[in-house]
Each structure stands twice: as C-alpha cells, then as structure tokens.
Length: 288
Image (cartoon, rainbow, N blue to C red; front, side):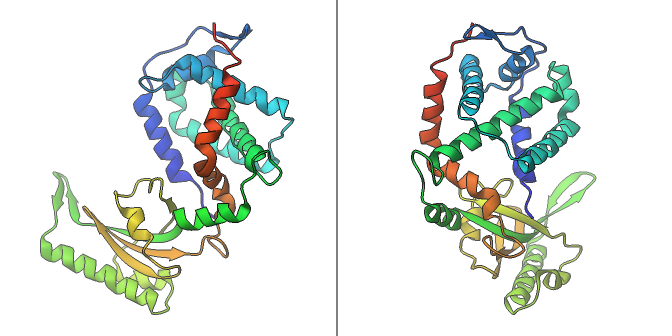
C-alpha cells in the first residue's frame, strides 16, 4: 500500500542542492578498465563537499563486482519497481540530467547498483548469511522505530497574494479544537473518513514515519507519533502546523508495510558495519 514517494522526493531535493553545474566528463579507469563517462559525470556531480569522487566510483564498481561474484539475481518484481522509480526520477529531472550529460540509462544503472547493495546486505545478514540477524529482532526494531499513520494537516497561518499571515490566537484554538473533536470521533470507534468530515476540505494522507527522520514533517513529529496507540488518534501541534494522526497496524491488514521496510530496518541495524565491508571491497580497486 505504501510507496516511498516522500523519501524519494526528499532524496531528489537533496540531490539538486548538491549537484554542481558540470557537464560531460572524461571517463576514468578502475583497475585499468574504462568506466562509462556518464557514470563518472554522475559521481563528480553528486559528490557532497569533502567526499572523494574516486572513492565513490570504486565503491560503485566494488558493489557491482561483488554482486556478480556472489551469483545473486534481482527479482522480477524489484526490477519492475525500479523501472517505475527511474521513470519518476526522469519525469521530473530528465532535462537536468541531460544538461549534465547523463542519460536515463545511466540513472537506471546507478539505481540498480543500489538494489545490488541491498541484496548483498540481505545475503550477509539474512537467515542463511554469514552474520544472520534474527527475524524477530528485525520485527522488534520495526515496531520500535517505524509507524504507519493516516493523517490530515492543518495550517496555523493564512495564505494570500502577499504571502503568509499568522492566524489570530482565537482562530488557532478553533482549528485545534476541531482537530481534537475529530480525534475523539475516531477514538469513539468511527472510521477516519467519517471523523474528518468535521474538518473543512480535509485531505487524507497515508505515510510511514520512523525514528531516523520523519521525512518532511516538523522536528519532534516522530516523538509525538510514538505516544499514540495502535488504532487510536491524537492531535499533534508543532510550529505552524497541527496534525490529526491515527496510528494503524503496520504488521497486518490493509496498512501492512513491514515487508516493504524490512530492508530499511536491517540497514539501520547493520548498515554501519556493512559500509565497512563495502570499504574493504573497494580497497581492491584503484582509479586512474
């Protein structure tokens, strides 16, 4: 049910802020083998301040090589999802990449390498891996650090031709009271859709938030969500926003998303250790 759309667009936004205005780049060689000039251009353009471009390239090559050496395969369903993700990226940023001399096919290669890395992580820490993580431990990590929610956002300001204007305190309190009334309706046993009829023109959204960062929600949002019991609703007021939030089961039923976020959990649990493994692989490669 849940798509990682919010995370994708935040990643793209970060990318835009980091990319420089460089165009096509000359190809480099890794262990004497020529690397596609577009791959080189991508890593030169996307490297953050202080990052070693050569290190990024060698890690990319190392992951791809290890994936092939381990005789792993990408499931068909994953490839279909990957194609959709790349199409979305290209729809919004195709012209930008084209100006950098980077094609859609290269973006696919970059994103595919990220899939390789995830599958290598699964191979190492999965049930039959060399350092397996107990599945119950992964599920418990998910329970403690992820939450599936339904929510409506209210704004404690008004938008006009001249910009935004803060609401009067009386208006703020009136809006917050209506959100509290809607939460009470949900907690009384009614459905979310019925409850939000109390709110004018309320748009319902579904999302998954986690302790490592609540995507585009205000700071402190996760801490407040964690206080809400499963199937209960609450009102969260932070900064210039007020939220009606219902926490729903993320492990079963309509909003199940453990299967989708299991790899994220595994990476958050073992990622730092795994990055050292990738560094070890990359030491076998040199850029010239």
